[in-house]
Image (cartoon, rainbow, N blue to C red):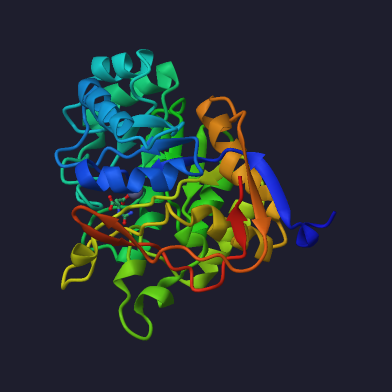
Length: 350
Ligand code: NCD
Ligand code: ZN
C-alpha cells in the first residue's frame, strides 16, 4: 500500500537516543512523559554538578528508577559527562559493569550546564582511546564555542575544526553527532563509511529560525543548536525519512520551567517528550514516508549502539486531531510542551 493511504502503523517500541530528564521534582514530572511511549533513552548527564563518574551515573540511574511511574517499563541508558579530568579506568569500569552506555562530550560553554566540558582535546585522548577499544560510543554536542564564530555557523565549523581531526586521531571511536541541524552535518554523516551516526530532534524537523525570530521572539522555540534556515530543516527531514541507518531519533527533549525560558536571558531547550511520536508521524506522513518512521525511531538507534530492537510494539493511528496539554505541571513550576504549529492526526493507541 502506498504510504499516503496508511492510517495505522505498528512499530517496535521506540527509543530516544538523547534525552534530558533532570533531577528531583522535574524528573518526577517529566519521566512519565517519556516512559509512556519509549522503551529506552540515552540520558544526558548535564546536571548541576554534572554526572562525571561511574558512581555518580549509578546513583542518578537509581534516582530515575525510583521516579518510575507504576507499571513503567523503561531502561535509562546512562552517560558520563566527559571532563579533562575524566579517568579512563573509571570509564572502562562504567561500561564493563553496564552502568554507562556512552560518554558525552560538551565543548566547554557550548550549552546549558556545560561549563565543565572539554577545552583541550589532547587531554581527553586517553579516554577516547579506551572507548574505541571497548566499543563505547561518544555522543558529541557538535558546536564550537568560540564567540567569534556566528552562532548559525557553529555546527559547520565544529565539523571542520574538531570532528574531522578527532576522527583522524581515533578512527575506531564510534561517534554520534547529536541533534544535527544543518545540511553540512547531514552531508558529512552521509559521506562517512563507518563509526559515525547522527541524531535528529523532533523540533528541528519542524521549525526553522523564522519560528524563533520572526513576528516576535519565541522563547519556547529557542534551543541549542539553534534552528537554522529552512533549507537545513528540509535536509534533516530528507535524512530522517530516508531510512538511512546513520540517522535516528534523539529528541533532546530539554525541560525548563517557564519562568526560566521567559526572561531577558532565557534558557535553551524545547520540551517535546509529551507529543514527540505524534509530531514525528505527522512529519513522516507529510513526506509520504510513514513506513520509515520505524527505522528512524525504533531500529537504526539500537543497531548503531549494538543493542537489540525492542520486542514490544506501539501502534499509531491516524484520525481526528489529537490534543496534548500545553503545559506539564511540576512542583518547581510549569513546563511548556512543544507546539508544532499544525494539527496532529496521529496518536499512539496502544
Ligand atoms: C539542553 C538542556 O537544556 O540541557 N538544551 C538545549 O537547548 N538542547 C542542552 C543541550 O542539549 O544542548
Ligand atoms: Zn541535549
